[in-house]
Length: 165
Image 1 (cartoon, rainbow, N blue to C red):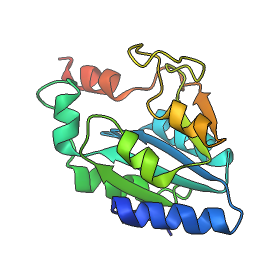
Image 2: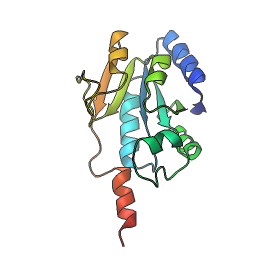
Image 3: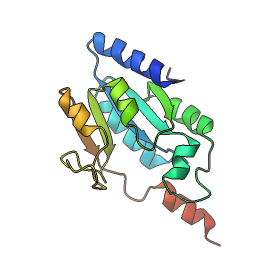
Image 4: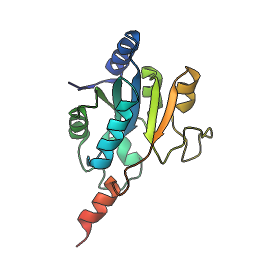
């Protein structure tokens, strides 16, 4: 059963799993209104390794991302609980920074995953396709993977659809 943990606990879990020879996968996101695209993405992420840790932006971090005044729709605790309830997720950790870099450095995942709108080969940190933490994961011999997004599913599109009269 997965759990919501703090940064230190996430790192402890990751290192313990790695000591057992298990591959730890890390991904992150807002996961505001969970939909099929999120589930497909998280299941695909987990299939790359043995354990999946998901970093979730806390409410203040989401507001700084500029997703709109009404976002997040769901409170951080609700988002963390929902994502942690998925079978494919082994641990969830909330973070309050603008990027998950600090968390990635603590966890040192074997595999870093983001959606298909990112490029694992992008090395320019100012590019919108750059995967934060990729240089650090590559530096310790890890893998960086972009998973194709499930077409037609996004929280932004769901919110638009709900607002239509």
